[in-house]
Structure formats: structure tokens, C-alpha cells
Image (cartoon, rainbow over all chains, first blue to last red; front, side):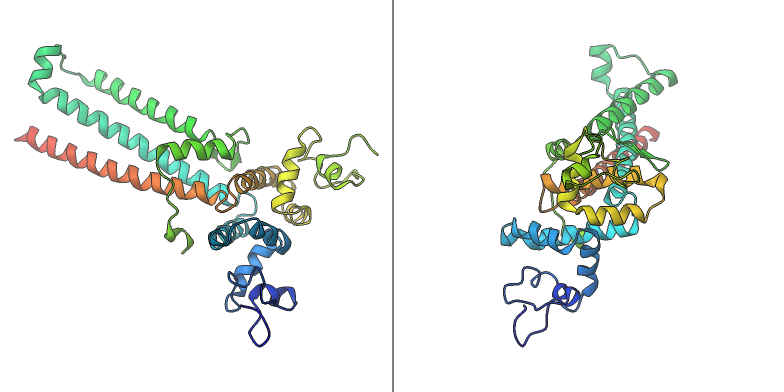
Length: 189
Length: 114
């Protein structure tokens, strides 16, 4: 914490000003990590960060600072796409995994249908030939891809950013419908 | 005042010069876009960022900044990092389900071969 006799926080050191006892930055930008504030200041600006923190309850400010540092680092690493590059990469991973899952689920369905005698006798299920199996797999993949595209509404490929995407609030609402949002500690490491 | 000022210069209440760095990306028809970016990043920081980029990448940079700024306005604590967190969780869950399904396939195929 700032104040007479104690070391100024990293923010006040960089901004070359007196670190007040109630300095809004001091709890989150200790003097032993000057890079943390430097990068946030570079991308967002000290006054903007101060305003953002002032608008938040105290118990949420540490997480806000960590997410701002994360975004600032992403923006410095990738000045064109920043965090959006990471979102696009993860979305592609999700798509690929969902496709693989759809294929696997279709395969297990095929195997179960082949070996379930009650199904065959009651529902007169025919033995699936290769073409039928391919169609079943293809339909599953299509459904999976359509669901995923509707969920996030945008894709980046070959460095082309499609600006016709769903709004951030609708993206987050769709994601939250899938599962509870877990703010993982590991995200900050 | 020039009626054809870009959204940035309108917001900042200044003259919009011919070589205004903002005008290709902030048309006057969408004032909220600049307002949101300015609120989170500040006009000066955005201008510096754009100046450091090749011209052909600036449109994409503005779109990604706009997206991140909107995320931050919608979620002042986590911003777009919240979306990253959700995606990571979704990946973990899907990987687990995929592993489980593949194990079931292996068991079923083993039974088939017996």
C-alpha cells in the first residue's frame, strides 16, 4: 500500500507521482511487478483503468485487473486481433471436438443398432450398409456444425476477420446456456 | 462544422481532417462504435495503436477492439476473458465426453470381435 514511508505502487512509480494511502491501483499493482501496470497503461491508459476500477465493488477489482492484464498482454502480442484471436482459435477447437464427438456417437449408435436384437425385431431396423452409415455420420456432423456456428456466429480463417458476428452479450448468453461460467484460477497463470 | 465528420471527430467535437486516422473505420452512421471504444481504450490510445499498424490491417484491428470494448462494457469484471473461460470449459467437457465415447466404442468393438 502507498503512503509515507512505504514504497510507491508500480502505477505511481511509472506515473511519477506520490502514492496516496488510498491509491486505487496500489492493492493490484505491487512495486515488484512494474511490467503488469506498464502493459495495462499502454493499452488502456491509467485514467481509463482507474475509472473502470472505481465503478466496480472492491471485491471484484482484483479479477477485473487480472482480466485487463490478460487482454493487454494479448493485444501487445497480437496488435491486430488481441484476445479475439484466442477466441477464434478456441472456437475452432470446439468445432473440431464436436465433430469428432458426433462421429463417435454415430459410430456407437451403429454398433448398438447392429447388436441390439430387440430393436431389430420390434422396429425392423435393417442392417446398415456403408452408404447408410456414411449418410448417418454426415447428418450428425452437419447438425453439430450448424449448432456450433449458431452459437458463436462468427469464424476467422486465413487471417480474415468476419465482422458480421453476434454481439458480445448474445455470445455470452448462448455460452451461459450451455454451462455455468467457471472463472478458472488457471486463466491468470 | 463539416457535416461529413467521422463518428470519432463528432464525438470529440473537433474538425475531421482529410487524413483523419479514424474516419475510414468510424462512419458517422455508427456513433456507438467509437463511443464504446473510446470509453474503454481512449481515443489517444486507439490512434497510437492504429498508427503502429500497416493500413491494410487497421480495419480488422478496429473490429477486434470494438468487440473487446463491447465485451468489457457488458461484463466490466471479465470482459472477453469471460468468453475465453467458457470456451476452455466447453473444450474440457467435450474432450471428456469424447474420451468416454471412444472408450465405449472400444468396448463394443471388442465384444463384436469375440
